[in-house]
Amino acid sequence: MFYRMLSVHFKMTSCGGEKMPEFVEFMKLALEQAKIAFDSLEVPVGCVLVMDGKVISRGRNRTNEPRNATRHAEMEAIDVLLEQWKKEELTKAEVAERFAKCYLYVTCIKEVYYGCANDKFGGCGSILSLHTSTTSGEDVGRKGYKCTGGIMAEEAVSLQKLL
Image (cartoon, rainbow, N blue to C red; front, side, top):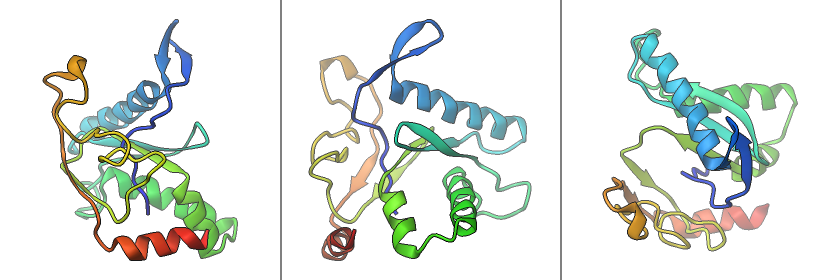
């Protein structure tokens, strides 16, 4: 699976009467999911999965309700997609191809591990360094996150070549 923290394209869209980059709109939707989690006495983390500029799944932390520590926001959103794609009888290759087109917007994340860098859209140092505490003078004070790449990179690249 491929996790992308932020969309790099800055297509301007209308939101609340003012122009905003689409990634802000998607993060607002993730924050709505975090608020739902909070109202449900869960850790307030939410996410949305986006493909082709449209939200295709949403998730919120739901670990307390089912007493299942694996029910993090991202897993909730992914499970919704997997169930939907199973009904569509997609092959494993088709599922992988769709996931490769997804962007994940999540309200809180501690660390990201990934296989291969994405030389076209990568946000963990290959194109942008979104994981660092500053990417430009205007971002001073923004908190970063730890990002570790190159884990089984050859295998990850091999899988990409199958698409």
